[in-house]
Length: 177
Image 1: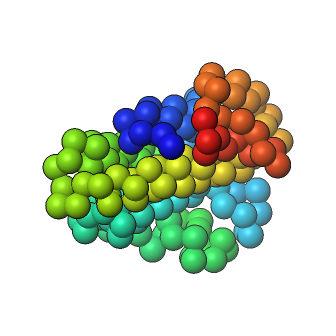
Image 2 (image 1 turned 90 degrees about the vertical axis):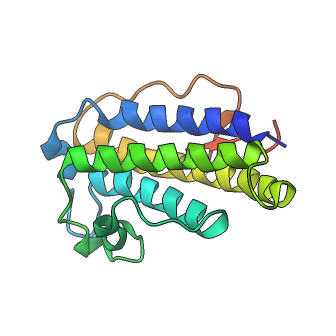
């Protein structure tokens, strides 16, 4: 099984791939929706971070949301037709970066044994990071489809790692590598 620090590197690689998919887009492209029952690239960006915070908060450390105003909007339980009033691109970027910093801080605390139940939380952290990485890539597929098919931009190369492969067209972390 992957160690927590190695998984954090893969989490960073997945986030960097996401950045390659959106950082060169205009704010209008990031907030544009192909139709009412689809989500804009910006929603996916916020949702990736929202899920990461939610899972870390609920499985390893109770802590407040870095941006409570985004919690309801970025929850996938919110029907797609109500996902249109997105925050600014800057706010989304800050939210993503803050959540990633918190993921790193908590996972490093676990990896260093600075938690009450280090062995148990290490098991949780490993599985949690695999889920977060694969969730990031899951939404990257949808971001990439809008980027290429609807907006006409080229796609970046897949991440340069032997830890990731494609399954049903989606990038996934190889759970046994």
